[in-house]
Amino acid sequence: MSASGVTAAAIAARLSAIGLPTRVEEHTRFTTAEAEVPETLSAESWREVLDVVAEADRFGLLATSLNGRTLWAAVRKTVPATGDVGGPGYQR
Image (tube, rainbow, N blue to C red; front, top):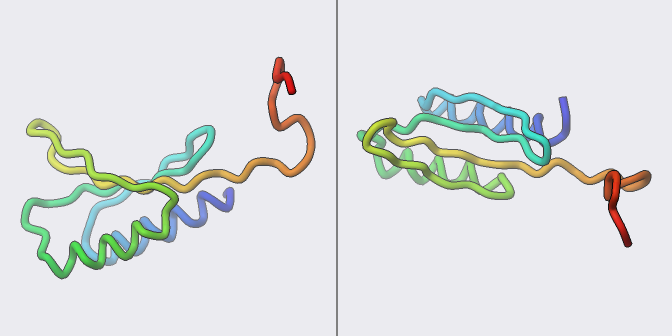
C-alpha cells in the first residue's frame, strides 16, 4: 500500500470509529477516504470529523437530494524523486 493509502486508511479508520461507514479508493495521483454522513450527526461529532479530515491534503462534502451526504478526504501520492517524472512527451 502506498504512503497515501496508509494515511487515507488511517483517516477512514478514525471516521469509522466516529460511526461513519467509510471506504478507501486508490486513484492515479491521490488516495481518497470517503464516508457517508447522516443528517443527524451531532455538532461534537462534526468537530471530530473536521479534526480527522484536516490530516488530508484536501477534503470536502458532496450533498445531493438523491444520494445524501458524502464526506471525502484526498491524500496526494508523492512524486518520484528521480526518473521520468514528466512522463512520455514531457518537454522541459
